[in-house]
Each structure stands twice: as structure tokens, then as C-alpha cells.
Length: 157
Image 1 (tube, one colour):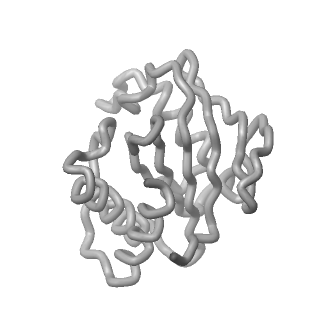
Image 2 (cartoon, one colour):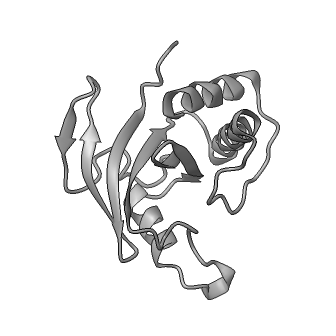
């Protein structure tokens, strides 16, 4: 199966509603110690899909055009202001896998279409929505977007 090239796989720790990346898997499957997220996932205005796994379970699929650190921090620190309470997994004190896929040519709507297709694949294959998924936006996906979603799902499942 073809492999998606624009992605990083981090091992992260959530503690006291803060996130700490501590390892990154390299292109050749070596584990590298890290203290922060690296480019290009730190760039603003770059569409990204991020997937969080707790052991073998995909618990969340999200998108952002913000720096991944800023987006995760916002979801972990939210207290309900304006109705947003943040991630349902924010109180976990555990190690998780974080997969980040970035897109150079897609706009936000197209990235959301891929995100929705990934969530659909999870539901279709496991019988359940991701445990901590709180919302999803649906768009009519193209064949290409469905192929990308399938490729991403196969990589992280």
C-alpha cells in the first residue's frame, strides 16, 4: 500500500491538561527524543488533520490550520467560554499517539471532507465513532479525498 508522505507520528504525554511531545517516529521508524513539535506542523495557515490514539483505539480526529501546539493547547485549556469545553480527553493523564498529516494543496473545506471520511471509515470498520469525537462537518468528498482518507486510516489503525 502506498504511504502518505506528509505526516509525523509523535508520542505525547498529557498531564494536568498540558501536552508534552517526548518522542517522534522518524521516516525509517526510528524513535527520536523531542521536546517540541517540528516544522511544518508548527506553521499557521497550513491545513492539518490530526489523529489521536489511546493504545489501539482512535479516540479523536481533528483538523486545524493553526500551529498544532496552539490547537492542542486551546482544546486542553478550554473551560466552556463561548460554549466550547475543549477535548473530552483533556483530563486523561496518559501517553498517547498523535499523527499529524499536512496538506499543501487542499483548502479547509477539502481537508474537512477528508477528516469526515476518516471518521466515517472508523465508524464503518469498528462499529463505533471515535470515543472522544465531539463534532464533525460533512462535505461531499471526491474520489481523491476518499482515497486519501483511506490511506490515512490504514496507516494509523
